[in-house]
Structure formats: C-alpha cells, structure tokens
Image (cartoon, rainbow, N blue to C red; front, side, top):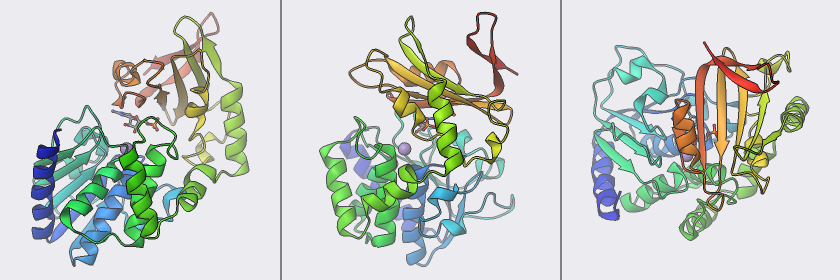
Length: 324
Ligand code: 5GP
Ligand code: MN
C-alpha cells in the first residue's frame, strides 16, 4: 500500500479505536510473537484509555509468550451473543485464519492490521503494509502516527513482534527503519536479550532432543534443490506433550545449506500436518507460491501450510503427504 493510503488508514483506525467502547482483539490460531505482541500492544493502549477490552485467540497463548503483559487476559473463545463495537485482527491474510465462527460471524466494523502481501483486505479498515518486517513494526508506526504513549509494557510487546519476525534481526526483512523502531522500543524499556531468552533461547531438554531428531532427519533433494526434514508422531510417542514451540528455528537451520534454494520442515500434529518453508532473496524461490500449492501462504521468504493428513514413506523410501 502506498504511504499516503497507509496514513489514511491509520487515521480511520485511530478514530475507530478512540470512538469504540467495547473492543475485541484477535489473531490467528497458534499465535506467534508478532501477532500476539501486536494485539496485546493495542489492547494495552485501549485498556489504559478506559475501554472494555476482550482478547480472544483460538488455542490460547503458548507458554513461552506468557511473559507479555496482560497475556493472562487472553480467552480462547467468545459468547456468540456478545456485543462489540469494534473488532481488531492482526496478522491474518484472511479472516478464516482466526478459526473461530463466533468471531467470523460478528457483524461489527473491523480493523485488519497486517504485513502479508496476499492480505485479502477483508476489514472495514485495512492497515496493510507488506514492506514491514513485522505487524509489530506497523503497529509501532501506528502508535507514532496516533501520538499514543508507548510505555515499557507496550514496548516489550512490540519488540517481541519485531525480534521474532526478523529472526533476531537476521532475516532479509530487517531494514534500517526496523532497527530504528527497535532502538526506540529499547529506550522505552524493552530488551532484545529478554525477548530472545523467552522466544529463541528457552528450550527444555525434551525440546532439544526433538530438535536433534529433526536435524538428523534432514535430507537434500538435488532435483528440487530443497533441504527438508520431517517429524512423525511415531518418532515421538510423546510429540503431543512437547511445547508447541519445540521445533521453532529448525527450518531456519535447514535453510543454511548454501546449495539449496529453499527449505521445508513438516511435522505431524494431531491428525494434521504443519509445514514451514523458508527461502532467501539470493536463492530466488518464492516459498509463498510453493505454500499456496499446498493450501497455505505467507511471505516470499517465510511461508507455511496446514492440512488434514499424515506423512508416510512411499515404495522408494521417500516421504509423501497422504491427504485424508
Ligand atoms: P511458520 O513457518 O513460522 O509457522 O510460518 C511462517 C509464515 O508462514 C507465517 O508468518 C505466516 O505468514 C505463514 N503461514 C504459516 N502457516 C500458514 C498457514 O497455515 N496458512 C497460511 N496462509 N499462511 C501460513
Ligand atoms: Mn508477522
């Protein structure tokens, strides 16, 4: 979206948030640091302004993100007859990703705030900028535009979004403006080291072992120039008991192989399979397009998909996705 349009959408979103009394905030199922950090920053501001705030996220908040202020108020669902003046959705290219019919069927004005290039512009107001490293960087711009105070708790939420979506400033989406935003958030009291400790560095021993298995299973397909790995629930009797974040970072490691054009990690997950793909600008494969062929989406260099099905080896010993 051109800068002029983004500023116009900021203005409409600011007025909508200031006028509303009862605001519902949400993001996608299996939320992550960016989308949760973004909605909590906005929810914290709304609470400070005396609004009646609900934050509902399908699947709740993963353990390692519970250090974020007010993450304890997050509920998993809403009552179908509940009334809200405004719905704010972060990080969802389509409303379906919220995976909650009670929210999808609400008939209220909505603010759709996101940085996915394939956002379907489903909101009443669409604040969408695919040039931003993270939704949190866009929310930071929105706070600056609106003249709203960024206190230490809000700064921590926004820095969490930026740190997680840039892979601690290592991904190609990190720009000078990203670092300026992060620097100001640190001045307001947030700490990169604290965010990294909670998100990237915190792994228990079972998670480290699961990581080891995922790396051991890595294979290189010279035809597709793809490095991939899989984890099936047969390999881990207690795969379900691992923290949802156990495999976070695996696909970035697979993507380190220089001769590969992209990397994919697939994990079996309660009758579904969840795939993560990573590329790189110098490698040139738009992984969002690969993910789309499997019913998913995302960004050029980081994408994913989820489908009902399982992993099985074919007669040549190669892994295949068996759709249910
Ligand atoms: P991750 O591999 O970290 O789960 O996801 C990387 C990116 O891919 C996310 O930021 C999101 O944009 C996208 N993504 C992941 N899973 C899905 C999915 O099931 N559907 C769609 N449309 N996008 C996904
Ligand atoms: Mn994001």
